[in-house]
Amino acid sequence: MQSTRKITEDIVWVGSSDRRLERFENLFPIPRGIAYNAYFIEDEKTVLMDTVDESVARQLYENVDYLLDGRQLDYLVVNHVEPDHCAGIVEFLSRFPDMKVVGTAKAIQIIGQFYEADMTERAVAVKEGEELSLGKHTLRFYMAPMVHWPEVMMTYDVTDKTLFSADAFGAFGAFSGSIFNDEIRFERDWLDDARRYYANIVGKYGIQVQNVLKKVALLEVEKICPLHGPIWRSNLDWFIEKYQAWSSYRPEEKGVVLIYGSVYGNTERAVDALAVRLADAGVSNLAVYDVSSTHVSELISEIFRCSHVVLASATYNAGMFPPMENLLTDMKALAVKNRKVVLIENGSWALSAGKGMAKELEEMKEMTVLGEMLSLKSVLPRQREEELNQVVDQIVKSLAE
Ligand SMILES: Cc1cc2nc3c(=O)[nH]c(=O)nc-3n(C[C@H](O)[C@H](O)[C@H](O)COP(=O)(O)O)c2cc1C
Image 1 (cartoon, protein in one colour):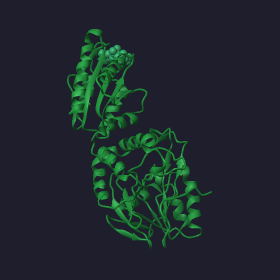
Image 2: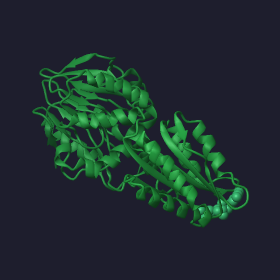
Image 3: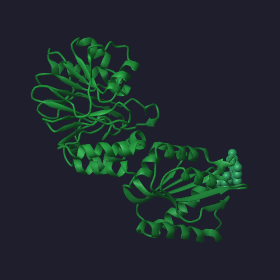
Image 4: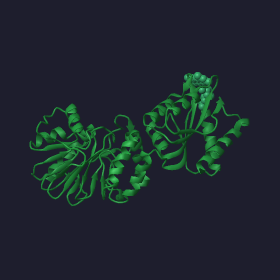
């Protein structure tokens, strides 16, 4: 059975959702599932924009069969060669012997690495600004290297002013029939997963995303069709502004995320005590997380959101608490920068968690540690509670800047 939705007169969504997969890339928990988007363009020439993951490929084949209605598929445009978008390449090559595969030269090379498919005579390598006429529609290609992978490009349908944006502007989350941003409550239900997707999947490549945003700014874009998550057909500027913030590592909001690593609960209690004092001082955008029970992708996402970060760690075997070390390693790998940080360490005999956290932060760019590190010897005793108020003052002052 077909399961498609029209985007414009000639562009049809032919993707599908997977609600069984536990971890995207075998790494990121996706309790809300994931949508794999692919798009069909009906014209004098027929085109499929990308394919989908193996898990939902059957639905794609039925959708494309339905829309072709006996016609041949002329082009498969591959904007991104990651396997979750490429399960159908070999199948379509064998179904349609005259079909051409359009992508960057790098994409064609990587397809050859993943799949045993004879692409001689069938691969069309395109470069920046090149166009492909389908009849009524003209597709124009824009290179987007490292907007996740090196071979990535975006395709702009000049006729329908639609941008096929590959992994950019994507989000975790399966669809419930509604595929357009104006059919869902994006800010309430999807934004957190869009940020988590961006920060963890593309976050490292802020400069490359900025380069692409500059190109997009010159185009008249009415619709954005990403490879995952909702299709944008209204309020585009709002979402593009989110991408501007995330890709320039500008905090999306003034707020404090407090993350602790604690064995026996004393570091945790110090962080809770700090959080209530911040609330008392009028700071309303607060989020407290246990580094052990929160997936690191959520923490990274929250750090992309907030201007201020409190990191509190018990000392563990002369180092940081292991999940805290993992978080800092991830922050470094994803090129997190431009945040104000408060450090709290704890230990019962030789404290070294703070030194470890500070060293990791030094290796990141534009990270400002506020004030002196708070060093706790097992607990924060009542006579030292005043020190929490000093931390509060520092954060409040810094938030006001
Ligand atoms: C496996 C293990 C290793 C530890 N290693 C150190 C250490 O190297 N130096 C230290 O001062 N404390 C060490 N500690 C003690 C804790 O850091 C200390 O008790 C701390 O106050 C615990 O804070 P919490 O109540 O938030 O868990 C270790 C504790 C455990 C369980």
